[in-house]
Length: 74
Image (cartoon, rainbow, N blue to C red; front, top):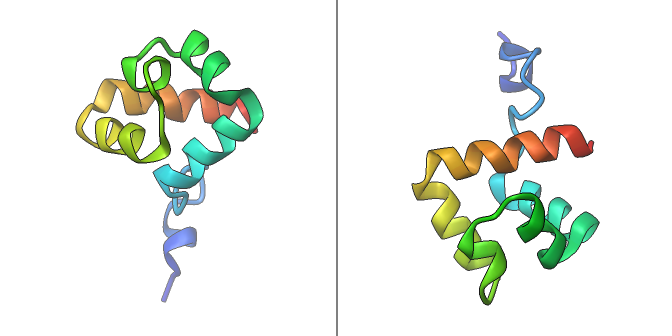
């Protein structure tokens, strides 16, 4: 029997929560630079983890950009 981590060994995002990704990026860049790097309203206008997660969960293209930045950052 394989564990979930073993079932996708080549996927560095497997098992990583979107909230954790966002927290790492905010800690590393801050909201202002994050908004400069990924120009989406949830990062540039009154940003919060909660509102950003709501938007990113509903918007695949924005989530993809956040995941790609995270992969380049780690």
